Length: 322
Image 1 (cartoon, rainbow, N blue to C red):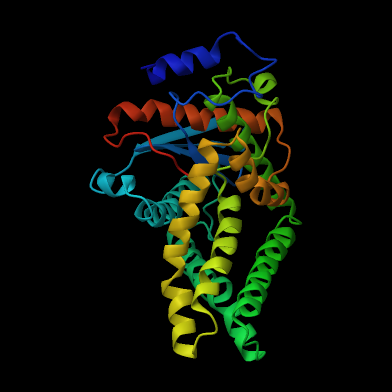
Image 2 (tube, rainbow, N blue to C red):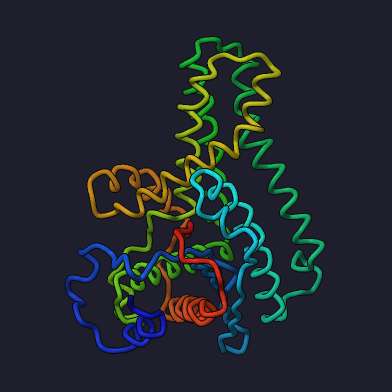
């Protein structure tokens, strides 16, 4: 077993196979790692530890690393359940990392970065996910009088897909969000380099794709596709069944989608993995931008902070969404 400290040391050393590293499969002994982009920063997680890095206004990089509670460790190994748990943990860690990054940058000035504002933002996001993304498309199709089960499911899915793509496209028009999307690209490229055991320096990391099969964006698209299949089984429901299936069924659908993303990540260089990740890869062209070297340096700092915390974590390494 290669120790994490040895892996990091090798990443910082000479490149053994630069020309072919991006073309071969990832080293499974390294283990997968996930994360998300922050405002001028990156958060990463692997197993029972997570770390974050942010570029301060003076140009320096601040880092932090933490471990996850051990009580939920057994649940993180259970198929379907681990997907639902991962969603909750991602939202929680994302909020914590955003708060920390804002404080490090000196941005906590009442414009949405205080704890109350962020928790309100999370609450609104949950309402949007379950209400606008989960329930509204089905209500619209039923109100339109569509009764054929297959047509009902397909129309509902297309509306849900339109909401997702339209929202992300409009979001990316903001200059600030465009930078977040560039950090998102830096996160993915750095994770690719880590999984392929390539030295963690910008020149080496740039050989990798800014898209990643375990991306959260890809996860959202897989959720849409899984809901089309799942809701086709429900058929043309009554109003009560419609509301219950779209709200209560969403966590189950998310669990199935999570397993599909994990499978695609493990088989990303095989035909089945490429087929599964193709729709999400397309959508990531919207949510990832080409990063600068400064952004890649921040992503590397977040990764190394995560690795540094692993000796203190009790949870074994497991696949997580990026």
